[in-house]
Image 1 (cartoon, each protein chain N blue to C red):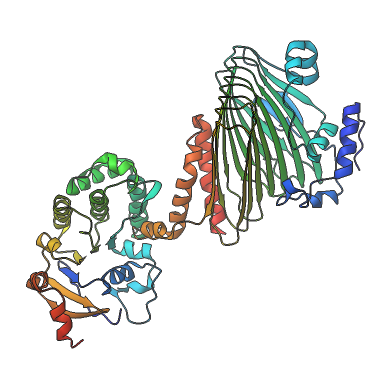
Image 2 (cartoon, chains in turn cyan, yellow; image 1 turned 120 degrees about the horizontal axis):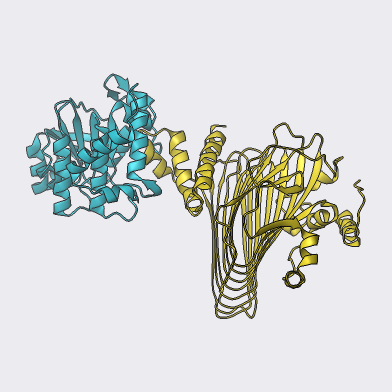
Length: 234
Length: 403
């Protein structure tokens, strides 16, 4: 990252696009707090707090969510169980009462319908032996449960066939509200047919080199990234 | 040191052997990581006073004295081992013919020399004991002491028994070296489930020798849960001396700060068509030391043996150490044997994933460690014991990670 200036308001969908190695996933990881990265300067203001001062779990409790490009397989931990822990830890952070088993069941049932995910999948070990589509649907299910204020979808379209892509996108669209925002990190335009962005930014060598409306994504699909890079004089 | 009245020649000879060798030191190959050298220097009480602890368990061993409280289940007897041998010439003959114990050491001699009370829990032919028998094993002393305990369990043909052992130190006890020998005889078609819960004090060293002989068509499911002690050494031997024998060895050790836990297992396959499955897991925290040494012998006659061994460990601290050594000696040519040991750390990516969903680092680590050990706990079929162990293991892991 070599200096990113980006402002995202509630209710907006921003797409971050760019060629391989431009820094898209790095940006997503830095925002979520992955410890492999060191931030040497700057700040990230998130609803009045500097995200960079917070541990990953505090960022989640403040309302940030990262849908992983490669969701981790965790043997021995079921989605249902770990989401119960997550929800109640976040509620505790916010000074809210813990949910009981009955309340969880009711809430889970509702959220499951958003991404058409089956109870049996959620009882199994997290992502273990899941297909690519099941893993991504599970990510969006978790997003639905945690109701983030800002969701970052990191290459959520990678490894999905068109039907899975549609289901995932529909889930994201159902969760959209004037109170929350979404960053869609993607290499290809096709996801943006389903999740329509308000703004499109092109990331190149760790910087945003061009911003525009949803038409920009279509232009990138048609012309590739070269014309932007050559316009930079490189 | 040590002189009580020794009544028999066997005891006197055993004592001489112990005196010649003393407690094991790290120069002994089998005790390389688990030396007891410092005990050679201590001024010890070799015959600590008897205890009268209240306990709800039916079987109780208090400072080496084993008794049975309440009424014995039908078909079960609890008598002195000498009386058992004297009154059952046929069983005594079988007992005498059992395979010799491998790796006998000075601690076994010490136990033979000084043990005061050897009882036998005897389940008669065809008897299936419905309720699990709980065995509270308690040690306590007012000054540094060495305590010898011994128990014989004899299952006649077709007998079934579940034994739940809870070893602990009475609160406020002085330093104790507890040396516990068990010899278990599982006759044809008999079935034994045995869960050991070792939860002793920070100044207790506990050495458990469990030697199991199995005859044809018998099955033993043994679990060793090592929770707490300054020093815990398990010498677990299975002598598989029949066909279609099933031996399942399950172990879980969770040593924390200033704790050493050493599991030395031996499975000796002597006859064809039998199987053994060994699953050991360890979570090492603080500056803990762990040792796993698993020997499997498949003797020339033991064709068609299936012997599997797996030992997996997580180092949950940069200061913890794990030593593993599988040893397979296979003389038969038509067998299936496998072994594997791994020692690693928690997956950083999995930790980040859980944290990114709002779970704190401490809880994420606990969650992953519990998921790792669950496989062993889930194999316990006695529900009450499974729940108690789960609670204890969660609490042990949480406490140790918080240091």
